[in-house]
Image 1 (tube, rainbow, N blue to C red):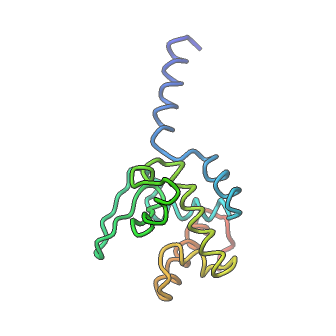
Image 2: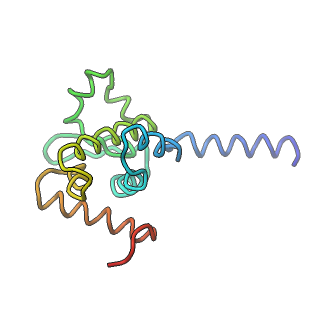
Amino acid sequence: MKPIAVTAAVALAALISAGSARADCFDEAAGYQKVNPLILRAIAWQESHNRPTAVHKNANGSTDYGVMQINSVHLPVLAQYGISQGTLMEPCKNVYIAAWHLRQKMNKYGNTWAAVGAYHSETPSLRDEYARQIVAILRKWNLMPAK
Protein backbone atom coordinates (compact mmCIF):
# COMPACT_ATOMS: atom_id res chain seq x y z
CA MET A 1 0.00 0.00 0.00
CA LYS A 2 1.31 3.46 -0.86
CA PRO A 3 2.25 5.78 2.03
CA ILE A 4 -0.55 8.25 1.28
CA ALA A 5 -3.11 5.44 1.20
CA VAL A 6 -1.82 4.13 4.54
CA THR A 7 -2.01 7.62 6.03
CA ALA A 8 -5.55 8.08 4.70
CA ALA A 9 -6.63 4.68 6.04
CA VAL A 10 -5.20 5.43 9.49
CA ALA A 11 -6.81 8.88 9.53
CA LEU A 12 -10.17 7.43 8.49
CA ALA A 13 -9.99 4.73 11.16
CA ALA A 14 -9.12 7.34 13.79
CA LEU A 15 -11.99 9.56 12.68
CA ILE A 16 -14.49 6.70 12.75
CA SER A 17 -13.41 5.46 16.17
CA ALA A 18 -12.97 8.88 17.77
CA GLY A 19 -16.68 9.55 18.05
CA SER A 20 -17.82 6.22 19.41
CA ALA A 21 -17.12 4.02 22.38
CA ARG A 22 -14.44 1.52 21.43
CA ALA A 23 -15.47 -2.12 21.62
CA ASP A 24 -12.87 -2.71 24.31
CA CYS A 25 -14.54 -0.04 26.48
CA PHE A 26 -17.59 -2.26 26.75
CA ASP A 27 -15.50 -5.31 27.61
CA GLU A 28 -13.27 -3.44 30.07
CA ALA A 29 -16.15 -1.65 31.79
CA ALA A 30 -18.15 -4.87 32.00
CA GLY A 31 -15.17 -6.72 33.42
CA TYR A 32 -14.49 -3.99 35.96
CA GLN A 33 -18.08 -3.98 37.22
CA LYS A 34 -18.67 -7.71 36.65
CA VAL A 35 -21.62 -7.19 34.32
CA ASN A 36 -22.33 -8.78 30.95
CA PRO A 37 -20.73 -6.84 28.06
CA LEU A 38 -23.43 -8.03 25.66
CA ILE A 39 -26.08 -6.50 27.91
CA LEU A 40 -24.13 -3.23 27.92
CA ARG A 41 -23.95 -3.26 24.12
CA ALA A 42 -27.68 -3.96 23.86
CA ILE A 43 -28.40 -1.09 26.26
CA ALA A 44 -26.26 1.22 24.10
CA TRP A 45 -28.27 0.20 21.05
CA GLN A 46 -31.60 0.64 22.85
CA GLU A 47 -30.65 3.99 24.35
CA SER A 48 -28.89 5.76 21.48
CA HIS A 49 -28.23 3.35 18.61
CA ASN A 50 -24.58 3.74 19.68
CA ARG A 51 -24.55 7.51 19.12
CA PRO A 52 -22.04 9.04 21.53
CA THR A 53 -23.38 12.57 20.96
CA ALA A 54 -26.97 11.65 21.84
CA VAL A 55 -28.71 14.03 24.25
CA HIS A 56 -32.37 13.62 25.16
CA LYS A 57 -34.49 16.06 27.17
CA ASN A 58 -37.11 14.19 29.18
CA ALA A 59 -40.62 15.39 30.01
CA ASN A 60 -39.71 15.47 33.71
CA GLY A 61 -36.95 18.04 33.07
CA SER A 62 -34.03 15.63 33.33
CA THR A 63 -31.59 15.00 30.49
CA ASP A 64 -30.00 11.79 29.20
CA TYR A 65 -26.40 12.03 27.97
CA GLY A 66 -24.19 10.06 25.64
CA VAL A 67 -24.11 6.61 24.13
CA MET A 68 -25.63 4.99 27.23
CA GLN A 69 -28.03 7.89 27.96
CA ILE A 70 -26.95 8.47 31.55
CA ASN A 71 -29.66 10.54 33.23
CA SER A 72 -28.85 13.87 34.86
CA VAL A 73 -30.53 12.73 38.10
CA HIS A 74 -27.31 10.79 38.75
CA LEU A 75 -25.06 13.88 38.50
CA PRO A 76 -25.07 14.72 42.24
CA VAL A 77 -23.74 11.24 43.10
CA LEU A 78 -21.37 11.19 40.12
CA ALA A 79 -20.01 14.62 41.10
CA GLN A 80 -18.66 13.03 44.29
CA TYR A 81 -16.34 11.05 41.99
CA GLY A 82 -15.36 14.07 39.89
CA ILE A 83 -17.74 13.19 37.07
CA SER A 84 -19.47 16.14 35.41
CA GLN A 85 -22.06 16.54 32.68
CA GLY A 86 -19.19 16.98 30.22
CA THR A 87 -17.67 13.68 31.29
CA LEU A 88 -20.91 11.96 30.32
CA MET A 89 -20.28 12.95 26.71
CA GLU A 90 -16.97 11.07 26.60
CA PRO A 91 -17.97 7.73 25.05
CA CYS A 92 -15.72 5.35 26.97
CA LYS A 93 -16.34 7.07 30.30
CA ASN A 94 -20.06 7.00 29.57
CA VAL A 95 -19.88 3.22 29.12
CA TYR A 96 -17.96 2.82 32.40
CA ILE A 97 -20.59 4.92 34.19
CA ALA A 98 -23.35 2.81 32.63
CA ALA A 99 -21.62 -0.37 33.81
CA TRP A 100 -21.47 1.12 37.31
CA HIS A 101 -25.18 2.03 37.12
CA LEU A 102 -26.09 -1.47 35.94
CA ARG A 103 -23.98 -2.97 38.75
CA GLN A 104 -25.96 -0.87 41.28
CA LYS A 105 -29.19 -2.33 39.92
CA MET A 106 -27.74 -5.85 39.99
CA ASN A 107 -26.72 -5.34 43.60
CA LYS A 108 -30.35 -4.48 44.35
CA TYR A 109 -32.20 -6.99 42.12
CA GLY A 110 -29.60 -9.71 41.58
CA ASN A 111 -28.42 -10.98 38.21
CA THR A 112 -31.93 -10.73 36.75
CA TRP A 113 -33.86 -9.12 33.93
CA ALA A 114 -35.41 -6.87 36.57
CA ALA A 115 -31.94 -5.43 37.17
CA VAL A 116 -31.48 -4.86 33.44
CA GLY A 117 -34.88 -3.17 33.23
CA ALA A 118 -34.13 -1.05 36.28
CA TYR A 119 -31.22 0.47 34.34
CA HIS A 120 -33.99 2.47 32.66
CA SER A 121 -36.66 2.69 35.37
CA GLU A 122 -37.59 1.11 38.68
CA THR A 123 -41.29 1.53 37.92
CA PRO A 124 -42.29 -2.12 37.44
CA SER A 125 -44.20 -1.74 34.16
CA LEU A 126 -41.46 0.43 32.59
CA ARG A 127 -38.72 -1.77 34.03
CA ASP A 128 -40.26 -4.94 32.62
CA GLU A 129 -40.91 -3.41 29.19
CA TYR A 130 -37.31 -2.19 28.99
CA ALA A 131 -35.99 -5.64 29.90
CA ARG A 132 -38.16 -7.12 27.11
CA GLN A 133 -36.67 -4.59 24.68
CA ILE A 134 -33.13 -5.62 25.65
CA VAL A 135 -34.04 -9.31 25.25
CA ALA A 136 -35.48 -8.52 21.79
CA ILE A 137 -32.22 -6.82 20.77
CA LEU A 138 -30.17 -9.78 21.95
CA ARG A 139 -32.46 -12.15 20.03
CA LYS A 140 -32.20 -10.01 16.91
CA TRP A 141 -28.41 -10.25 17.22
CA ASN A 142 -28.76 -14.04 17.63
CA LEU A 143 -27.24 -13.87 21.10
CA MET A 144 -30.27 -15.43 22.76
CA PRO A 145 -32.53 -18.21 21.54
CA ALA A 146 -35.89 -17.28 20.08
CA LYS A 147 -38.90 -17.67 22.36
